[in-house]
Length: 432
Image (tube, one colour):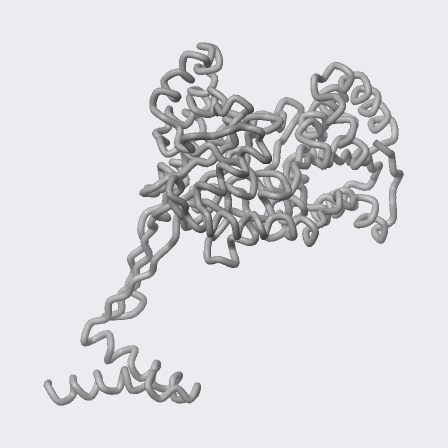
């Protein structure tokens, strides 16, 4: 990681630029995949499994026998950890439920709003360099709470044609039984168009590589909603003299190990803190099993020294990180946190690692990246629902509100709109 000392505002965007995503080149690869799946269905999915995953798949749908076997392969220790995480995630997402709204806006005019679960949702769970069974919890739990009628889970198989046991155990734990052995852009295509084994869905969730992301964005053009535009994982840590350098370094590396296109940013209040953190990063990275991946990610990363707190907060809001860790003096903590406007999820204090949110604290880890935290929220219970409004107007109500509607419609030159009210008002006059 290079260190920048008090860079000018005009340099922020270029110096903190994320790794470039060559979306047009990627789309050229993804579009033919989408078309083949649309035309050939399961046949195309099996062909792509052979081509990309190097495995011959006979049955795309995971069987109950495979799920039962998987449970035996997951250690009791991991099972307990997954169950504890499930409890916390359920608590936090159940608390997000809101009652239906019913109110009378004026005499005789009643307006209502009701929350309804999206009928069919698709969950994409990466299983390549890291099998993200935690994402099964993060997406499956709110889908269940929201009352989604059909939940489809797609995840790539290994070279033996199997799904990672922890993914199957977790899916079964929360009641997902439609699990498909398919990954990559072809999985998104299957959930978009539907195949013999994969139902089409109304909304697709889940992280993935650049090909999955491109496929999700193409799915939107076909009328399927997605959770959010998402790119490689990222974290920004804001640290002053009270921060513990080894902790900060561990948080930076926890994101760097995700992939070579991940980015980590340190915003430090002094060069001394920045140097101490860099020393820890260099020491800790050598102990990681995924150190080569982390080192490549660090090439995309930077430490920025900004002594002025106001300027540091402006930089954070300008960058809009997926994960933001704030390690500052407790006397300043509340003020700093209150001034954060753009972040996917915020972690406060020396003893709050980003890993807590990734796994078990209760918040959701599916978050906006690539600066989309400026205008997108992370996944929550609301992501799996839609709000339907209703209204009921009585005879007295149409008499009260009718003249207002007539005047507005007439001035917008929409005669039929006005007439829909006038005809009712005349009916009431004639029948009173």
